[in-house]
Length: 208
Image (cartoon, rainbow, N blue to C red):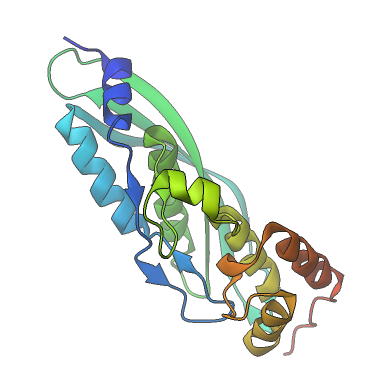
């Protein structure tokens, strides 16, 4: 009977390459792969090879209440510990850890952080990749698509929110070279230049 490690390799052979199922409603706009899409696909693959997982522990490693554009946001970063186990016969178990970030104007920051941690755990465990618009295959994406990664889009988006309003940021993205106004359509060089411009902008003072 195959052990947990062998089953992980078997699960990875499915080569999950998922299509983004959402787009942000505020500027800067970008496509994203939701946690729901990732967990649904990952749980099906894991169950197919006889693996399951449980949340074992949560640690808060950072929290705060930053003020962004005059509004107070609740931010939390957690470290989640997951137990991946053989659900068929051996009872073998492997421990994994992942980080999760959550930010919300109300009281949902912790829940968002846990969702993010589960998403990061599954992305890493199964080496899940995200297709881009118009992508036909993983190999074609590597050779033909020159856009920036989802992590880079997220980083730029978070930086933009702390520097200017949506309309201003959207105009900067277009001036940087993405006529669509979407961060994902920037080339790495254009993204570098935009990041420098955003970083050089002062953080708006909060208004009472």
